[in-house]
Amino acid sequence: MNQLFKIDQSIFIRTVTLKVKDLVKVADYYERIGLKRLTETEREITLGISELKPPLLILKKVQEPNPPRKVAGLFHTAFLLPERKDLGNVLYHLLSEQIPIEGASDHGYSEAVYLRDPEGNGIEIYSDKPKSKWDIKPNGRIAGITIEMDTEGVLASRDENAAALFPVQTIIGHVHLSVSSLEATQNFYEKILGMDLKDRFGEQANFFAMNGYHHHIGTNIWLGRNLPAPSEKDLGLEGFSIIVTSKEYWLNLKEQLKSCGVNVMEQGENRFAIIDPNGIKIKFLKNSPDNSL
Image (tube, rainbow, N blue to C red; front, side):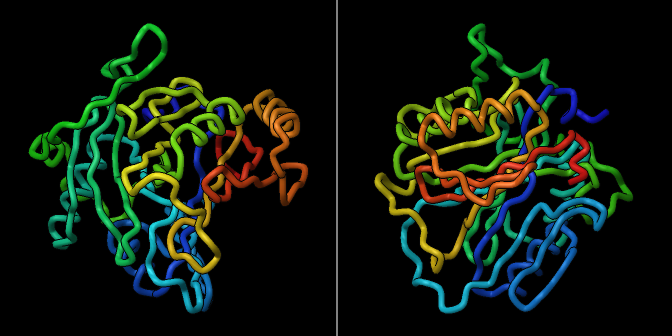
């Protein structure tokens, strides 16, 4: 059992959907860093780990997109690798292929490298440290840090003959958002969706999770306050989907959304969608932990 499933999570991120201008160029980049192209049409490309698993990333082509502007949306998509050696393999591959790396950090609970795709969408590739090494406070908060990653140690942990692709257990570990208001976003994710506030970085960033993880959702205002919601013609994040593995949470969430007057769309027996305070679409999918939907 890998480190990921040692944590009793009732939710996890399944897929991130991005709106892009140059569909082929962006898809080629994600293939180059370690994802596999699963399906392709003129308007949409999906990427992931295996044809037997749901995609991790959906790219949708936008015709005549808006010029770049500051809107709420994606700070980065974070791909969670099963073990440190996998991060070593990826880092070695990135360096060998001379793919630009924006940063490499130790966050106390994880080690991560940071990239940016050709249209400016942020990417984190990380592996978690054993939970015994996390700085878990008596109140349940999980304190993060940002220091220089032990690059030599990560590279030394790699497999000599590892494949260039991300390992098959890779998932979206978390999504980090640029938001319009920290306060409104905190109210939504904490009080309406029932996530725990696990850590905060001053008055600039908050981190939310379920059932003991360090964060499934990150939020920050580093791009500015009062950002407008993205329109259909704005490039970047369209939304993401969340797998719910807890029947109790699923039922409680639907009741909470109803009582709070949140508009619920695309309803079915095992799925529905909502829009968060920043104009970001979230799809909820009811499923078992093996993610076989």
